[in-house]
Length: 180
Image 1 (tube, rainbow, N blue to C red):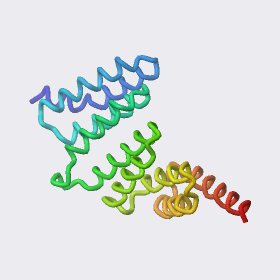
Image 2 (tube, one colour):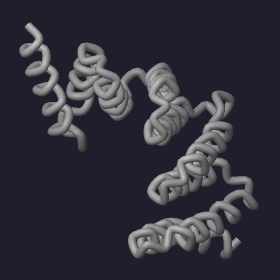
Image 3 (cartoon, rainbow, N blue to C red):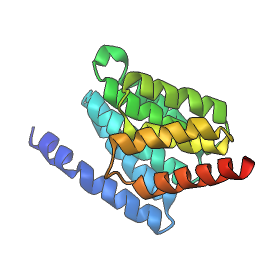
């Protein structure tokens, strides 16, 4: 029992160590560290911890340009956060995350399906609106992107992407104005 408490308290420290290793250019070591924590959580049948750790490792894989492994980790996390788990927002976050990972592979229509699913599960999920807006802008669907960026600002007036969303909106208005 004391090992369980000690390990669960150490999980954030392991994640921090993994990020440090990644920044040092040691992505394999970073992934190995997170994998050992995942093995620990799996051995304790702790689905919530497994979901968090899989999402964390997915980012590490993506930053190491292994998008296939990143998407596989998000897929595994989604399977653990199924609707039966009564966790629609967590599931929405995972679909949003997978959309980000898939977008890196230039499979834009697949990413769009993930963002749409995230917003279906959590209609007020600001980050998913922002990410879908970026995707739609990339796909030259300016009016739809505009709607998503405006919705993001409505939901998250002090969010991390406020400045960027405003810049996208300004660019869209400038492009539409130039077309007139």
